[in-house]
Image: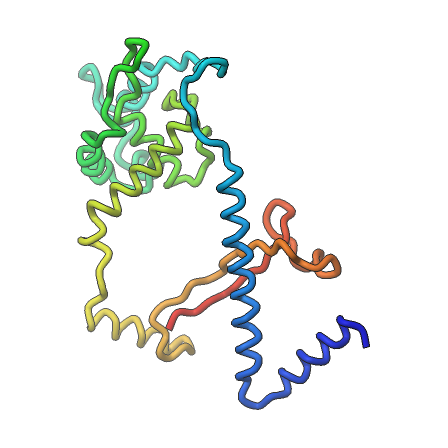
Length: 243
């Protein structure tokens, strides 16, 4: 009996058990192995990732993006500039940023004085990006799920600045409003939620996490066709329920 047949025989024996405890143990062990492999892979990719060096001798010069034009485009499109009303109304603004204009304004007024978002003069004597450029770029990145350089020609910022703006803004939002909005549910709301899950056939379930994609680096060749994931990689979809 080769290794594959022995594996199938072991699996069949486990499935024949009445209580299913051994099957659960095998599944948990399988998921733990996948998670460990994924963590090691992320660690290797992080270590290989190129470090950001900024402006140094021998590097390609920055594009002349005309930052002022990006600020004007944003203010003219969604806010008021030169006494002219914005081109896009409240509905358009909410469609583009997935939040009302008042919410965007509230978040912008909160983070605009943060160190990274402040507009400064660089070593060449030129003004750096305006806070509204970084804010709009981050909101478009989050709300539309587009690539970091997709909005470059509109906000007139580099891919690196857009990615860093998104990272710093998300950290600021969690730090500023996390204690207010990320809190334990009230008992009556929790009871209502669990009653709804009970009617759907999952008694005792508080919430669910659906379709988590895990990359499987050591996928056997004979199983590669059945575990095709995103962009040609091998992966497995884990559906987990939180009790």
